[in-house]
Image (cartoon, rainbow, N blue to C red):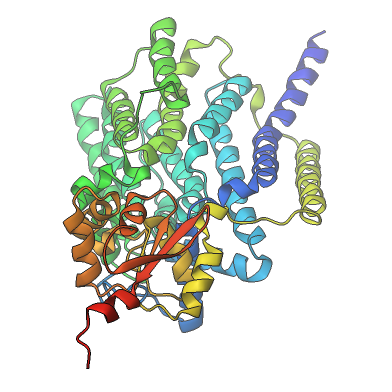
Length: 496
């Protein structure tokens, strides 16, 4: 009987090693199937366009050359590597390229997440946490750089948390992760900010003598991580570029992904917060002060900006994994020790079979499915008409900026809010919402606008129908075009 039990443990151990890969493959196939939902944000257009520019010029942008309102203004791309990857994939496989690249990043994130949780939790719990994390992040899973950086964020925080759990310091061999993150996306500043709380957790229960020595080692690691984050083509300017977006003040409450979370109606994030409170109360979970601060910090970030919900979803379970695991009598056993060479071959064969099955499924699906960008972000017919009229200065809707850039048309504004600044973009939004009619007419005259391209239900589009000197030229379910009324201009001109 003992031999049978031992064999059962060995089989479970070998199967357990494949679970993260299975979870990753499942996430990949699911998001591949719903891949069109990843193409919903027009920022993807200008991300690809900048990546193409970098590849064509073998250089990185330092100024803006896509707008007619900020030409030559200082601007750097803190996501240049992601943009290049998106551009390469798009050039080779059209929209299937960015979709597959994004789904691979999601799959890798899920696999790493389950692998890290597996050190403390039972597999069912680890997989459940992964499913919940993906569910909470669904609103922000898009073909954009932050998703390519997601697996790096999870791996980095998992490494910091593991070091804190063992009352040690992170290995400097992991510093290239920070360099990779800082080249993929500006969110790397979160990874730097979390070093301090993790260091406090590492020294929390040690005696004072050991605390000082360990804190010094964490401090040196933090300095090294800061230096590693500057290993980019922009150097130290990467730090400034990554933090500029946080200085937009009131504007952050207007841009949808930077808005605070709303509990006006029940949503998954509200359920997660309530579930977190309920879990703590039901299990009698006791956390150290640094862990409490970490959970509160991540929760506050998610409440302040909805785009931070995925950080909450993936990082809070990593903070809670060890305390939760200590509550379980079957947390982990020593039976998961070193495996024999035959067992490793079995694992490798199983991994190859999973990857092969995912690849085959992908090939079959791709042979009869063509990914397309959401129509509400691509006013094709309206822009075709504007090009025919040779419109030069177009007052465009915020969400159409990326598409216009992809068509090589200078924009009034686009998703790079840090380029335009708080005052300019707030004036723009107030003009579009016609909170003051003077805002709209002033911007149209100040920037010598010869055509407007608004969403179909924009208040500005309705008001322009009644403003002297403007006429509606085109309208469909996506966009409305207004142009200067030449006939009225001629009527008021003095006759010869």
